[in-house]
Amino acid sequence: MRLERTIIGMVHLLPLPGSPRWDGSMARVVESALADARALVEGGVDAVLVENFGDAPFTPGRVEPATVAAMSVVAAEVRKALPRTHLGVNVLKNDARAALAVAAAVGAEFIRVNVHAGAVLADQGIVQSDAYGTLRDRRLLGVDVAIFADVGGKHAVPLAPTDLEQTARDLVHRGLADALVVSGPATGQVTPLADIKRVRSAIADVPLLVGSGVTAETAAELLSIADGLIVGTAVKRDGDVRLAVERARVERLVAAARRR
Image 1 (cartoon, rainbow, N blue to C red):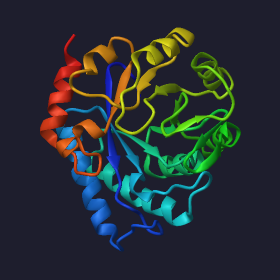
Image 2 (spheres, rainbow, N blue to C red):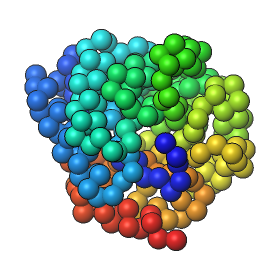
Image 3 (cartoon, rainbow, N blue to C red):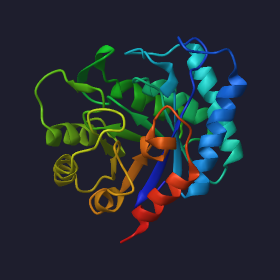
Image 4 (cartoon, rainbow, N blue to C red):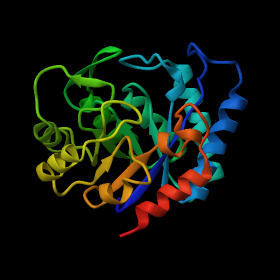
């Protein structure tokens, strides 16, 4: 998957089996995911990223087998419905190996990893990276799945003082990340332009994506520096992350992003 002015739309899943708000219906989970995915693709995005957003509170480590199974079912349905659309997987909070397993099973092209190097303090407590396990799993599975690694990550702060530039360099040179994601402090919050520029200056030859707070008003400016955008909140009805994707909002954002 080539990242060049790429727009990736979030498919935020309803609560999955075993999570506190699971309502007992996988049919509803699949139906909601397909509706959002279709609205995103029909609105013009280049890829969709399936994420277990409804499973809060999240574990800091491995997720339960039921989560992996459910995400595989949903991702397979999205792949079947939209076979020409690039597909990614993110297993919150940070189970990259589960995401990689789902991606391998359904033929997804990338995974997002919130903490691929170092450790952070988040609402789950201390969340630690496992680039060692993730990269070896990818080699053993023999799949061509790219790793999109967050630089810092949302809803978290570094466990020890560090800077964005060094984190970016460690992710690429020591964690072997294929692309970097820079985000704001929380879901839907603006990603500081200064942070994007700092990461770009530190790592100029690796694709860079903006991971939060993208709007139709900011998309073009962000793409003057970054290679791609991950959009979620701004394309939901009324700009509410809890609601469904609205095709008209996707179209507005995509049109704005395509302006040069």
